[in-house]
Image (tube, rainbow, N blue to C red; front, top):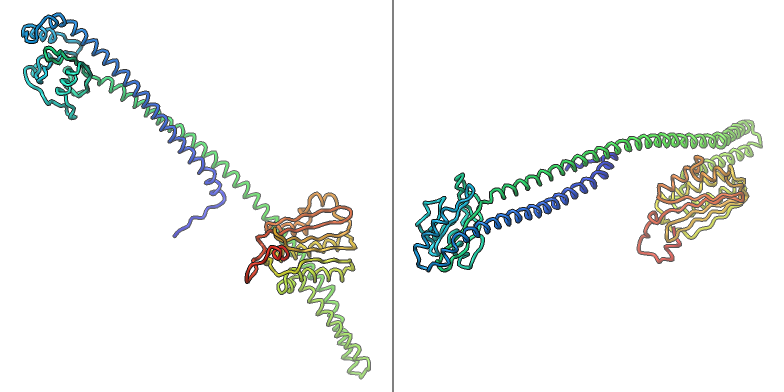
Length: 473
């Protein structure tokens, strides 16, 4: 399975563009739905108005026809054939427009008047339907029996011979059992509605194009900004990496110089003394000098000093007690050696440690203490120091205080960012997601390093009470 790995710039671009794309898609869908909904409402309203106008027109036509035959119909009997013939002749002659005419059916379905479709006259059209299955004759008769009403169906236009949607209005002559009606074709209404829908679709497409163009411009802007930020951050990261690399090299060189000085000024001098003592003892043994034993004892004492010095240097590089017994004993040993070496009065306090700090936290706090004691020895001019290490419910805290002259004002303002030693302490604690505080005044300096609870290991073999957890680190 192939897993794609994204760099910082790609992650930034994805983080910036994904919400934008989702927002644009959501807005586009909402705009489309709302636009179509509003457009359908407008089109429906337009269609209703146009159909209403057509129906009013039909009513007017039928009112004219009724006015033309009312005198004959009103005086005639139900079986007056002459009156019926006169009425059919009048209605057959009332043509209007290219396609307008009046038709007449009796209630049995026989066509009596159809001037534009004479082939229908005299035939029974009961059960006639349009191509869509809509009943025509039967429905017209049903409407006429109830008085009057409208009916729509497909019909052939006389002017073109093509089928189109037609709306008819019929009334019933109940004495004669006749259906009289007329109709108008609404293909112009359908064309207007279709044109309105096409206009709406075109408008929606233009809106989509506008949104797409704005989205592309926004994505281009985000991409350009992301590239600029990425390049700037990469340059800043490269500069920081170079500084960090240089500081690592400086720290390595400083440590090598310190070890070289320790070897040259300490072990090298002692070993020279041992060699001189052994050489002197050899000559005195060769000459049976009684002082040969004293010389050899002095050489052995020098050799013991060299062994002690090697152990001290090794402890400074990596104290074995830190791994064997834990942070508390290692710090206690460090403080005691510091007091013996410098003559400064020392105080060390802690709760009984149960080696519950992880290795990274132990090493970081030990190195902070080492660096702080080195700074006190070199710069503080203190006569008394105090070191306290303890665990608590939020993690562990190392507190180192002295009564020296304190840091100068610029250094105190810069806090741990000034000086390589202080920066090293700050970076060690920051790597643990902890905090380092330095409070300095003319009466002394306090260095407080806090390690979060995440670096406190769970005890093996069961759980501790809250009091034990707070007391151990």
